[in-house]
Length: 195
Image 1: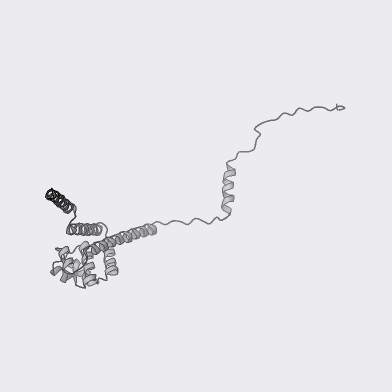
Image 2: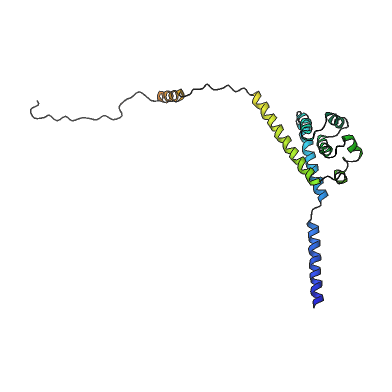
């Protein structure tokens, strides 16, 4: 009887462990999915808008301290903007050049490279997603600035307190000439003595 209970409990524990591991997510797959999503969005933005590559270069220099020579090297070796941003993050953490990282195989397998350099994959994806939000915000700000500058809005004159009088004059213009709407007939009663 005791052996049967132990076997049943062992079977339940084994089933629970198997169930838990089947639903547990693979951290490498999650990292690759998040990184590919960020890289894809950055690449699409750089392809759609002509000004985005200039914006990305400025932001990479400001956020990660990447030198312009590194960006030129990447552009000369057909590295897309999503990977340039990823390499810039890794460079800020490790101090290695884009060329060295590419030779060491970083672009082929970011997960292995991140583990090899003892970086945190979760921190990296969080930072790159924040960078993507910064790019969106900066790009939208520039678009609105262009729209604001391109539309010439004539300033309205300051009417001050006279505006109310002007509005009243417009309202009174709609009023017709006064005419009686009801006529009252008055009956006069003569007093005694009046003729």
